[in-house]
Image (cartoon, rainbow, N blue to C red; front, side, top):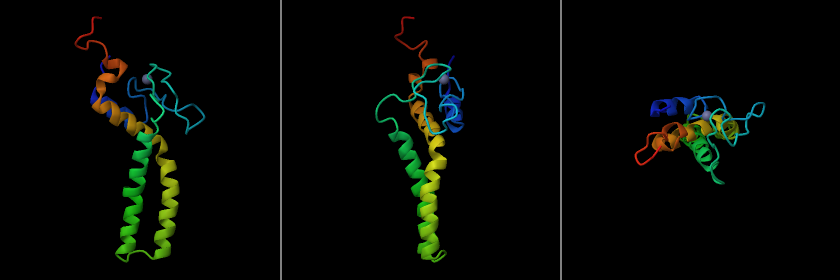
Length: 132
Ligand SMILES: [Zn+2]
């Protein structure tokens, strides 16, 4: 089974396993707990101690540059009062990372395997140099 880059991106956007496309990224009943391995194909989601840093950076970037900076710009150009800008930035700064948590994991895995698709088990077969 060959996994294309388009499938990897589609699986990442929908928080599915990048290899088999099943909804196995998070534990059942625990929406913020990432499974160590895919229940469907065995792909290891957390490959090392710092694996959470990828989703963390995506989450931070979306929160800071997609939400907080526009709020600060609205304040800087006089469209929001200081109190409104501060309270909106505070609420967004707390809520967006929580809302983005699951997506950031899907996006991170999609990004990783988009650039390294040969690391997916589904793409290992038939690699040059493999004897079988
Ligand atoms: Zn899988």
